Amino acid sequence: MAVLLSFGTGCDNTLDVTADWKEIPVIYGLLNPSASANFIRINRAYLNEAGDAVQFAQEPDSIYFKDLTVQLIEYRNNQELNTINLELVNGDSLGLAKDTGVFANSPNYLYRTNYDIKSTDFSQLYRYELVVINNESGNVYRANASMVGNAELLAPFRVTKPHFSIEDDTNRFFYMIYREGPQAKMYDCVIRFRYLEYDTTDPSITWMDSVDWTIFSNRETIRLTGYQEQQTAIKSYLFYQFLASAIEEKPNIERKPFDMGLYLYGGGEDLYTYIEVNKPSIGIVQKKPEYTNIENGLGIFSSLNILAYPHATIDDPMITQLVSSPRIDHLNFVRP
Image (cartoon, rainbow, N blue to C red):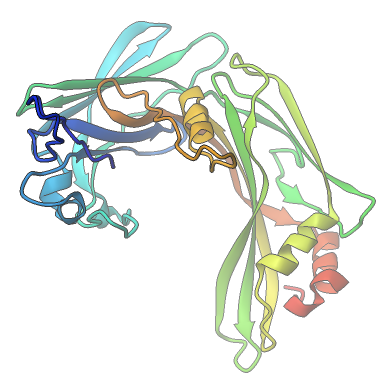
């Protein structure tokens, strides 16, 4: 959250750090057509003249606006269709706890809508304008986001029968192939491996655990119009090498493979730019430019579309590999 310093106008050119503060909203929102509910986070940033910024960041009354109207205006091919009013909710009561840090993490106020956000397709471009009105000051803040369309998975499996068969073989490849969705500027791909654990002293008590294998992240699309085919070939043994490093060795614990998931995250153009600008600096100059697409504010409003297959079957030959592979024999996998 930004801290605002205002310069005094006197002729002595001194810095007045307790001048009247300018209202600055900090807004974050990623509309996801595949989600049942979408949320917008809105905070405010300023330096209060009665104390320092860190102190006031810990006070909920200092980081939230008291009276906002938050709306989404829906457009299809630039024709206005609907106005959606978002409701104020406390994320804590919804199981959406805010991470701890410098700023107050409770209450966790968010603005929610259960409206059916539409995704773009080859003939219909959906766009949503975010409008935030401060009913106390009358100030209005806006941002626009084009909706990312649906990607199409071509490999590693047919979507009618999702299953994984990854071999521990240095000469074989695992293929990830998909067609880009329209208005997507970037993709992340994650494979989740889930397994049951139990203590050999009491096998009746089991618990589920998982690890995420990132295939790629922030991969730029070929073009915003979508429907371009992308392919990634990865040596299949790298999956087992990943498991060896990601799962903790526990001598008294045995594990049973359960299932796997595949997640392809498509992000909009503004989200891609925001991530690129905020990457860690490796040069001499450490100061980064401030990127925002919020009119008269800070933050990012963009689109996300997730292609998810959360429960894919693990083929029997792969289970055999998980149990017998020398790379992961220290993890004590056994057959289900």
